[in-house]
Image 1 (spheres, one colour):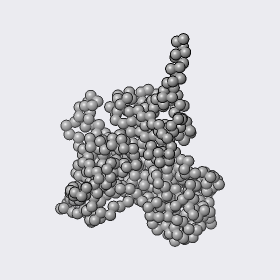
Image 2 (cartoon, one colour):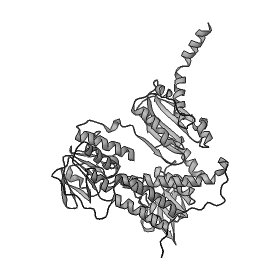
Image 3 (tube, one colour):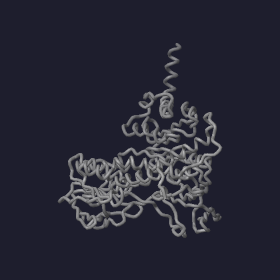
Image 4 (spheres, one colour):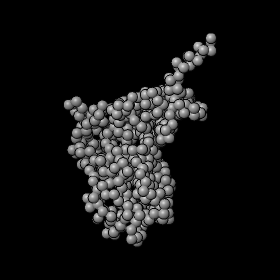
Length: 503
């Protein structure tokens, strides 16, 4: 059978990607007597730590059992955002009349072409973390399964590597639900969903966290009949209720069939289809779909490491136990990223790895608790957050004053027909000190960075109000919130000044 040019291109992208991240015929280097820093796991955190340590002149060994780049590049952030961008295009084409255009009567979708685009993107980004490139930088790169054999040594496929300091950065894997019958009928996770040979006609998403909401909306926009079941009363349970409600409304507008307070309790095959029983308030219903995607969370990847032999405390849910300096009970060994942190984000993993390098190799005393950590759920609209929520501040007995600017008051949001959402900035009452912020907007992930910068550098809202923004931009909503604070603290003084001028 002849191979099309598109199939050859797809194959070439996949070949480049795999050769960069897990090259065939790779030969591990001869081990040195002892490494200044030995790193288990070559995801974003492991690679960042290796590069920073080598820049300091340290002897570094980096161990990876599968592919370089971690879940973010291989299964998570990069492939999912590539698909979300395609889905957004299709949503905009269906609503072209909102912009003075004409919506096509029929919009066919080419799943293989979308997957080829995904592979092209992944291949391009893989060049920045290739095995050959890391080796040229002076990093001793080992492929294989690592396990501790003593408090200062690791074995990699039978070869012993000794270290002065070690970093565990093995990341996390998908949390698999214990639903009777699910394994028998088959299901997808974040690590397998992009291997689908074609777009499914129908899909059940189990779990209403960030991954579940993002992919449910994306598949619905691409034309899949999409059902989402979430065991809690609202999606994104960690986010503020009005923000989460906006995402729920957006999913409904895109045609997602929503089942909240609903738990998947049983799965079975019905011909070529998959039937799943959902239980809500004692009432059962059945939904039948072509594919099932689980998005209920992630678990630390600690299996097979033999952490006990290194004197490291851990548990299956939290992962490796570390202090605020990211040290384990063994003072030689640190951990970073998903394997030990509550916030399992790529940016947090990289930042925590930098802390480890400074503390382990430069005798630093940097603390995890000092990080300002922003995050974003990339639905449309996006939800981004940084710092404390109001409830967290209340639990700590910190008085809070909130300034809210709706996006429908922002000129650029109106011009873009993207006026759903808001900017909320939470202050310590009586000051302009920023405690946290939530942004709901089309580009909330970009907008939250301004607030993150202000918090990290201790810039208050008074100073932020003086920062000139380009006009018109959606980011000016943050300046508007700062200006609202300035106006709120001056009315009595302004009134007194004006009255004195009238005498």
